[in-house]
Length: 345
Image (cartoon, rainbow, N blue to C red; front, side, top):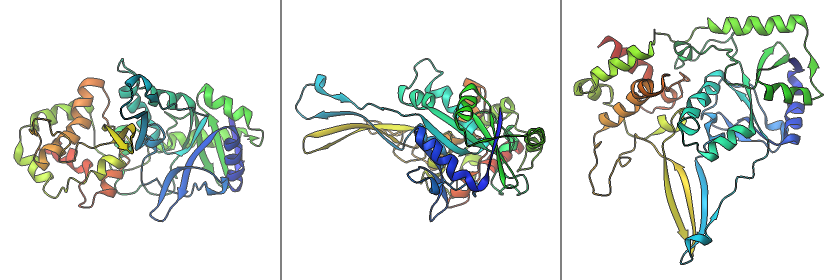
């Protein structure tokens, strides 16, 4: 099913989706674009390259309450925090981010012990993917094509959107996507020419150029295994690292979290919060021992997890080449260059 709508009527489409549930879409902020829950359909802005933060927070919020309790009361009196989800529409997701959800599903759903919070949000959410503009060169940090992700790749989306002049083409990719398109009567039927344009754009997106190297996942995994004890290599590439953790917070496939309790005036909350393997105390044990006291050890962990451990255990590289870590790093550490240097070492 292929539908279309005028680009200047995107706010009308947003309003229809808001009438059906929760809409999360890109909005323009002072520092750039980010995904936010929409309260006014006019907030939706698709004139962006990519968002500063990935859209993973739609499924893994930065802070998430699990249990509330009162100090001194029985544990049986503690109350689980219910999600009470409405249908959710994640609108304007770039192909690299859409692919990241499939990687994250491995950890939160497919390992035999599903995370009910992630799983329920995934089931409640319809993903509207959005192709990159093929007439605009990729930003220097991007390398998603090196990982087999096309600039107009519908994989991972329920509905995929491609802009054609002053019109937006929307194609249902999954039954969930087909269903929502059929329910929105403000969309027009697309023509045969529109369908050809859509298919041609998807195909052209496969040859769209970002930074590129031949990333053969098993070969890269083996190379990092061979380099694991090469301290000189890891010290050199981590020389400027500040252990600030920004690379992990902007990454769509980083999922480390901590569970903590907060107590105030007798009331307690147990919550999950984002954590990062780049933080100094991430591996600090109760005994006082910390197996990763040095910066190079923490950077090695992050890189090897994405390009070696994950490949060995699950198959795919745990990176989608969105370039956010490089763009956000205050000292310009570039994971693409690290992989390139490793392959040449």
